[in-house]
Image (cartoon, rainbow, N blue to C red; front, top):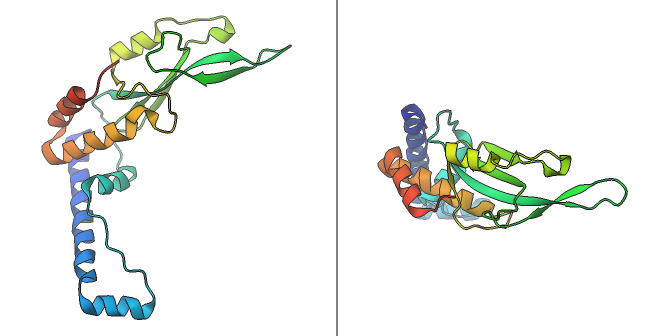
Length: 184
C-alpha cells in the first residue's frame, strides 16, 4: 500500500474513532438517555475496538500498490461425477496436499482473488503452476484449513496487517505477518 493510501486509512480510522467516542460520550449524558427513551430509540454504545473499525472501513479504501502477500484460501481436486459425459466437481482438500489440482489465493491488502488450475481434466497439466506462483509471491498458509468459510485465516491475517500498519507502519506490519504466520 502506498504511503498516501496508508495516510488515508489512518485518517479514516481516526475520524471514525473520534465519532464513536463522541457518540458514546453523549450517550452517557442523562438528558440524552431520557430523550432516547422518550423517542423509543435504541440506546447502544458504539464499539471503539480498533479491529472492528478497520474491518468496517476496509471496503472504503482502495489499495493499488501492495507488498505482494497472499493467503492460500483454498485447495481442491476434481472428481468426475459424469457417467456418459465427463462432469467435474471440486472437492476440498488440505492446502498443502500434493494432489491439489486447483488453488485459490487472496491478496491481504487489496483482496485480489487468483485461482490457479492445473487443468488435468482437460488432459493438460501445468505441474509447476502452484510452485511458480508461490515462489513469485509471498504466500501464507496460516491454518492449513479446508473450511471454505474461514478462508484459511485470510480475514485474521488481513486485520492483523492493517492494524499493525496503522499502529507502527507497513514495514513492521510485514515483519509481524511473516513472523506470525507460516509460509507455504
